Image (cartoon, rainbow, N blue to C red; front, top):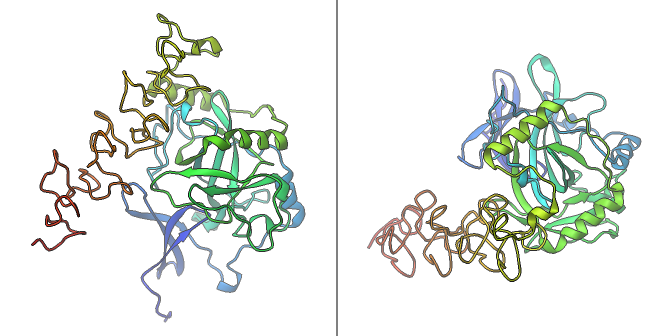
Amino acid sequence: MYPYRPTYTEEWDADLQRHLRRYWDDKQQMYYRKSRDATTGEWHFFDWLPRRPAAQAKVAAPPLHQQAQASFSRQADLIQGTYTTQNQQVCETLDRAYTVRRSDFFREGTVFSVLFTEAAGNTTRNYNSNISYVRYGQAVYTQIRRFIVVRKKQGFCYACPIYTYGDQATTKPGVRPEEHAIAYSEGKEPRLIDGEAQLSKQPICIIMNVDEHPLTVYSRICFGIHHPIQHNVKVKHLGYVKDSDIARMRGYWKMESGDSEAPTNNPAEATAEATQHTARDHPRPVTTDTDSYIYNAVTNPHCYDPEHNPYGYHPDKTQYCFHPVYNPEGYHSAINSSGYHPESNPHGYHSVRNPYGYHLTNNPHGYHAASNPYGYHPTTSPYAYHPKFNQYGYHYQHSPNGHHPSVNPTAYHPVYNPRTS
């Protein structure tokens, strides 16, 4: 008889950036884990834990020369996508938040995570990874790696990883502190851990999405290594680098990499598939002419001009302003007054930067201080009505009998007021 084991144990894994539950399987006599789908809240199988004594369960660190080799490496392995015309599944079955994105998603400063599994061979790196065993007893690494885009290319991007090095930050043997900078969430204070030497690179602020956990104190951006990542890879959006830190981030990468433009051996089919998917979802003119962003009343009426169109789009000067192709969710006082702009309209809707913002057609239940003060927002307006997130909440138009602590405190709500008076 085996000793009693609880049904499951649950924990937040900082490296994998997900909630995990550990279960015991009597038939296999092994532990396995389930992961929570961020979209549906459902729990799905994640991996098997190694069948070995607890004292030996921790994977040994690689030799110092291997760690140093990984740290000195300028370009790491290509991360290839699986989306093709034969395999048109755009989301991961494990977590539908991992999905194929449009090419304009991979702009400099975008922070995302990638889910993939690879065989645990002799050359497999084991940072930010988890060993598990699959059919026929083969060991694999199932990994979730976090990246920051540092250079956008045609069909792929270069991205630097965010590591915690097993909660050791840059104190881990073999890691070169001079290649790293602290990554911290907006609203938090960047700080070193005990025993960590002062870093020469200034911290980089990350604005995390509203439904994401803040970065841990161990998070470090490694500018000494970058991955070419194809645009047809299924990724989860985590946040973006604060605008004021973009130039610093770009400079640190160039400092460490020499701004390498080495060939990435992108398979032609994968690049073509990514381009095809992008063209279908987001028709962008095929041009690299910088004149395409110069205002012209006939050919480019939506581009920026300080006199004729101050809210027009330009990738460097007015990247948050409206353009029907380059930025359809951007702000324009006349064309799209509900669009997002960090200064002109911070409460406007944007599917990535402000998914709870208000938009007359794209998100009529979102929050806006002036246009929709009773719209739903998880932090600014949690009591407001939303058909998905808070169907018992109050809204003067959509739900006048809904619950609100100040407007209608006696109304029924299963959480805030389960007993009506």
